[in-house]
Amino acid sequence: MPIINRFAELHDEITGWRREIHSNPELLFDVEETASFVTEKLKEFGLDEVVTGIGRTGVVGIIKGNQTSSGKVIGLRADMDALPIHEETGVEYASKVDGKMHACGHDGHTAMLLGAAKYLSETRNFDGSVAVIFQPAEEGGGGGREMVDDGMMDRFDIQEVYGLHNWPGVPVGSFGTRPGALMAATDIFTIDIQASGGHAAKPHETIDPIVIASHIILALQSIASRNIDPIESVVVSVTTCNAGTAFNVIPDTASLNGTVRTLSESVRDLTEKRIQEIVEHTAKAHGATAVLDYKRNYPVVMNHEKETAFAVDIASGISGEDKVDTDANPTMGGEDFAFMLNARPGSFIFLGNGDTAPVHHPKYNFNDEIIPIGCSYWAKLVETAMPINR
Image (cartoon, rainbow, N blue to C red; front, top):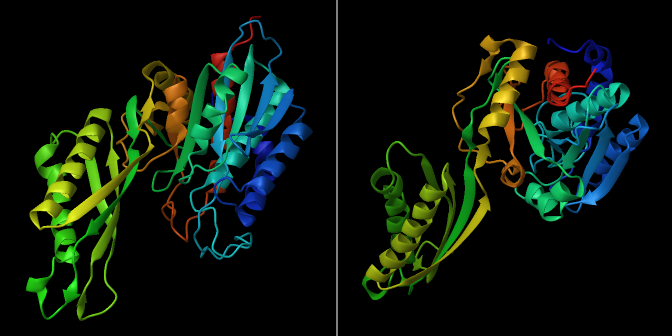
């Protein structure tokens, strides 16, 4: 089960699509041009159904096999949105929009799924149907949640769902995944401290919110070291601290923002509880008050065991067993494909992008060499899961 020859023939064409998308990045749900590009291609390929506006700006295309007696429907998902980063790659097809770029490879994911859709609509060598899912707003907007909440799974009778993401630093042609937790839940928090400021020369007449903020920041680090089982994983990071306007004034207020990353719901629950206790009681001990606003964002990307074993078999057939890491280290980065995995069984897999800049970096660029590999993964997954009865 090596690379499908048709994708070698289509490589240049798919690369052209990828670079067109790369040059015209769009953020979050505002992906109208990208969604329009995807829609036009799917209609050109002759899909049986193309539906827009799912989850606000998402697109779903349906491809029916030469047989449909199995009644099976598999969903394949790609993300379409870019990041608010100024591109520094210097490539000729670089972003035309200042301050926006495809710094995570969603342009490549979309192009590869388009390539797979073209091939599958040409061959239809499967018994069942495929839903190709093009999702907006993965980068913080929760587009996956929006598409699920919009009834996508029931509307198209999707029974299993699979996702793929490129991974810099992993050799081209290599895959990595694992059953269970693969990527972290990504929560965010804001802490507003109300104290009593005054002249910096008379700190004894004030309640200093900056001192309180400092105690809170340090105490939050004790959650990982003293509250969570060392075998478990948690990250608590304070990423902004805002207070004061002058060198000789102790302010009345201070504000902290941060993120929490966890790989299990029990650790997630305990971490939120401990943050609340630390914030409330540290402020009270200093004679001030503090309010925590804690928002649960993306859940854990939790791969299903059976579907992950199947995904591993497909990847192994394409690249060889020695190039598939079946126990990949979980990452504390997040992915809203988690919402789809919570709605249906499925699996998420990483595909090596080679020795490139990391994702979310101004010099990152999707490696077009991996296009035939990713396309073959999608196509073989469908044809193997829904074989024609001959």
